[in-house]
Length: 150
Image (cartoon, rainbow, N blue to C red; front, side, top):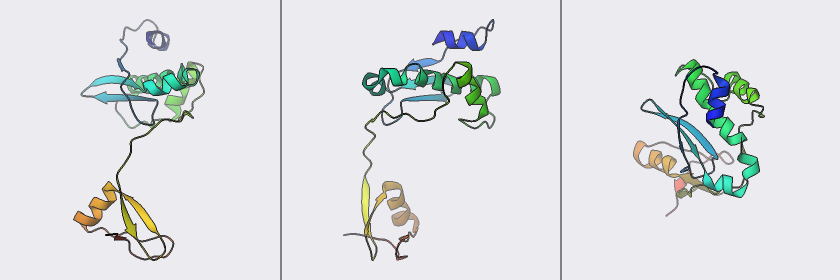
């Protein structure tokens, strides 16, 4: 991975960010900035299931995010915009955003709500908004207000 940073900025000293293999869910990789420190996080399940699909592409994908940040700073740059695509192409990778490895995501709690025509599974966030903030949701099919099933 350090080779990618050296290739990107020859002659400029710079260290690679912290690398962790603690990412879970459906994402194969993640670049993040916390308190001024960069981290590259990878999903070990993705690499175990399909090494060839994720190495080197997922690694380069996240390094490209890091290099966009190092080049342009924290100003508004689209996450997968032309700057990111240029870094991907520099390293000889297709600028793909998603992967096809079937990973287990988190199981989210849902709440059953009814209308005239069907039952809807609403997220915990929407349930909270209905219960505490008095939001109202309507069915797109029949137009009736959704009410929680008892």
